[in-house]
Amino acid sequence: MKYLHLIWSSLFRNRTRTLLTMFSVLTAFLMFGMLDSVRTTFENSGKTVEGANRMIVSSKLSLTQMLPASLENRIKSVPGITRVSTGSWFGGYYQDMKNFFPNFAVDNEYFKMYPEYAISEQHLKDWNATQNGAIVGEALMKKFNWKVGQDIPLQATIFPTKGSNTWIFKISGTFKAKDQARAGEENVLLFHWRYFDEANDYVKGRVGWYAISVDDPANAVRISKDVDKLSLNSDAETKTETEAAFQQGFVKQIGDIGKMVTYIMGAVFFTLLMLTGNTMAQAIRERIPELAVLKTIGFTNRSVLLMVLAESLLLVVVAGLIGMVLANFVMRGVAAASGGMMPINSMGASTWILGLVLMVLFGLLVGMFPAIRAMRLKIVDALAGR
Image 1: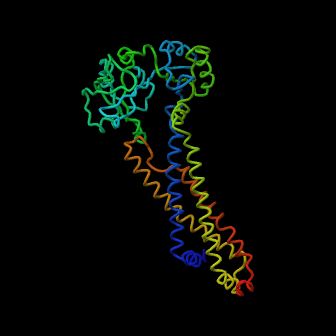
Image 2 (image 1 turned 90 degrees about the horizontal axis):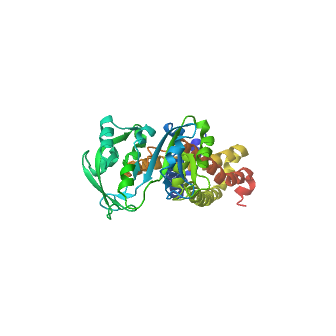
Image 3 (image 1 turned 120 degrees about the horizontal axis):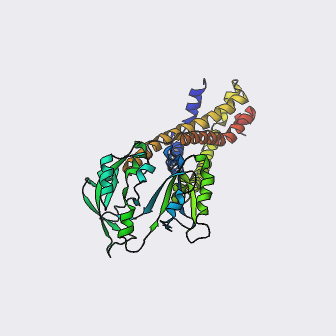
């Protein structure tokens, strides 16, 4: 653009005001990049190629309500289901409540159900041969410096054993996520459901949920209805849904991440719109005589309009891009500090696209009224100070 030097000099006519305004815009888009990355991470949880043919059968009442283990054989009889695996939330912690991590009681079909996890045949064999054996993700092993063959105590928060809250597990092996973008899923300890069923003091013959594999995702709706009919009108009615829907429902127990992000960013961007709009309006008011001179020497109304809009866009887009780049680095740091529990290697394409659209939109909005005023400016009135 041949007028870029003129636009740039106009933008930094009052450097302090411009830099403070840019800092506000930068901060707003830094927050946007971080929050939207968290939102998209949660919304995309469970949406994997491997999980496309998996569904979860859980209690219709609540995720805390357990289901009868006897339901497994009936689920296997439903046409279209190729494999069934059980899982139960244990809720134990290691030594201190701060050392909490996901731990589940699962059956021997677990690693067949989840082929995205790599485990050696020897570790799998040792696990199946050890009653209190546990398989631990490699990330969790590194975190606590555990070794294969080591006995580790977990303190139960829900299920006591022999009058005590201490459960002893022997680490039989480790597993690793084949896709290291999902390394956060390695912060898990798995042990035998049969051991859990025998050793806990109160809950017998109950499982937390069933994971089922279907022959064709296109049959998912029909299969979910058939499975739910098995327990219809009983005291253990089920809700069958895709794995992605189940995981998102689990996350929404914390709150609707999408709505929270929308409300927060709505308030931030509204404030930003008022602040930046006022800054642009004030900048144009101070330059009315200069704009009149430009028109006097031959600049058209259209040229003046576009120059003011370009100035506004440059202000918002430059500061916004810096904020988004900073957000990208910050989220990588957050992901590293979380030990993989927040698997955000970089901001997604959808966040970048939405951010760029918002920058252009805000740039046009805050510059529109000052630009129209500059376009309609009459040379005689401007030079006369009217």
